[in-house]
Figure 1 (spheres, rainbow, N blue to C red):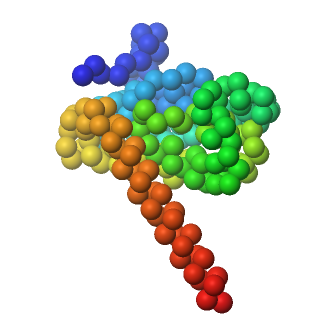
Figure 2: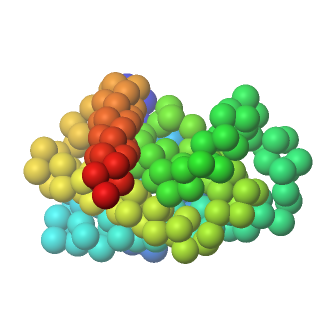
Length: 199
C-alpha cells in the first residue's frame, strides 16, 4: 500500500519542523489543499520517534486543522450559498439540510472520520448557513482532538501498522463510527422525548 506523501516542495519545508510542520500540513489539508492521510501519517511517524511528545503532536495536528477549517468557514460565510453550491459538489444539498438542523454534529461527525468520508463540504455548510463560530470551534476541537489523540495512542502502542490499518479499512471505520454516532444520537433524542413527556 502506497504511503501518503506531501508534494515535494511542501515536504522539504515541513521536514524537520516537528510539531510546527504537523501544524502546517494539517492547516493546508483542512483549507485550500487536500492531502488524504498525510496529517495522520506525520502524526504517527512523529509519535513513534518521540512517544513522550505524542500529546504535543496530536494537539498541533488538531489546532492546525482547526485553523484551516476556520479560514474555510470564514470564506464560505463571506461567499454565501452560491459559493457553497459551487464548491460543495454532489453533497451540497444534503449538507445544507443537515447543517440547518444539526449544527454541532454537522462538523463533529465528518471531522472525526477518516477518508474517504467527505469533510470540507460540511465545513463550507457551517459557514454559509451562519452556524455560530463558538459551536463550530467546539465541535472541531473535540472531534479532531479525539481523532488525533486516539491515533497517537494507537501508534505508540501498536506501531506503524496503525496507518496501514486506517488506510486499508477507512471505509469500515466510517461505517462503524457513523453507526455508533447515529445510535447514540437516536437514543439521546428518545430519552429526551420521554423526559419531556414525563413532566
